[in-house]
Image 1 (tube, one colour):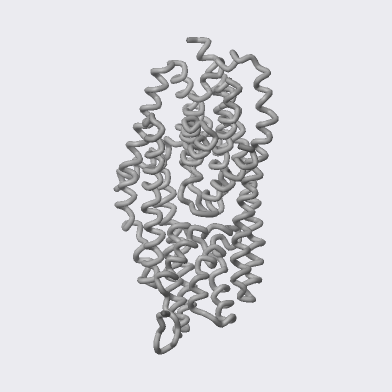
Image 2: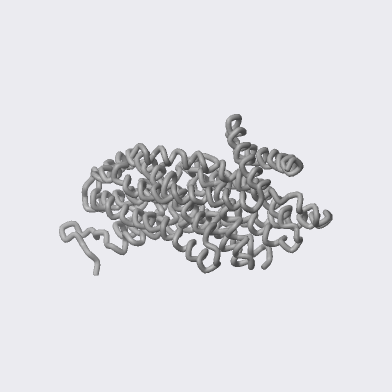
Length: 211
Length: 265
């Protein structure tokens, strides 16, 4: 499947984060599993989904706070890890895809800020349309807003996959045995993810005691 | 056949109108922005109502101006505000001239209530703890069909209360009107919170234990690196709240530590 179609799927799943639905299909355990299934490696998609889910579990997406775009990032990590499994350096490929994901979670957060500012302009147009009671125009502007977010996230995903396409083949310059030195990558990522989630668990236990 | 208020000849809201608002509520955050927050999506949710109640363009214009202004709420609990708005707009269309002012005042009150209740119930409890149950099931179940079943189960575990409250909220807002805030006390949702906490906390604890046992059994080195990585995050977060710095620093420090530990073992 071409990177363009994968980017569109990521953009579509990413809508679920805030813009539409919000039924959890954008969360890593769902989105990465879906992408893994589409790309032919469901087990790897599930594994990466679980690992990446831990990083964003504690974040409360309330109000105007800027958060990493963890869902899009997780999907990018999953796709890159699956696309380059053929390099036969699973640990290095995973490490690279994980770092790609973290980078693009930051870039995604910046894009979300831009999208929200663009929405401010769209609301101005809606208020103008409201003066003419133009409900059709208001509805079209709403669809425009959804389309803009979809395109922004799809472009972000496409750029990520294109960058990976340029950089990941350099890994094959290294001898395959070097990958054996990096077997601790996944335990490291597990450890970091668990560390982010434990405080939330602690707060929840305190809440139960208060009940 | 339209239901009509015989005296005023004003159409009353039908179930289908409320159902259309419910469907639109899944896009309530579509135009979220820093200035008016959720108001645009809120106004768009109510379009079936403006089309139902008003034919006069001036009345439609006034309706849209009332609801496209500043408003904020949790995206699921906003359904209560939608229900109240439907009720008061129906009253306003039927001749209650004070209904629009009551609506304005009530929406200001609901901004903080709906946010507080929704964030506490869904973002702090139902969402993370549903996902924790999903994480445990996906990690422990081995076969692909079981993993797919686990995903469906997690999906339902989260979305049953979500969709129920989205739908019920509109009806309760419509039925209770100005008294809807009485339905939004935290105590009312305590049982639901407790269920998700009582399932999610053991699920996640079991997942962490299973993961640690799996790492320990496969390779003592991996287990030590896992503990080191978790510990490094704990220490780094004493100095900074920056997520990216924490992750990247912990990742590379742990990588170096992994090499050092493997040399020692």
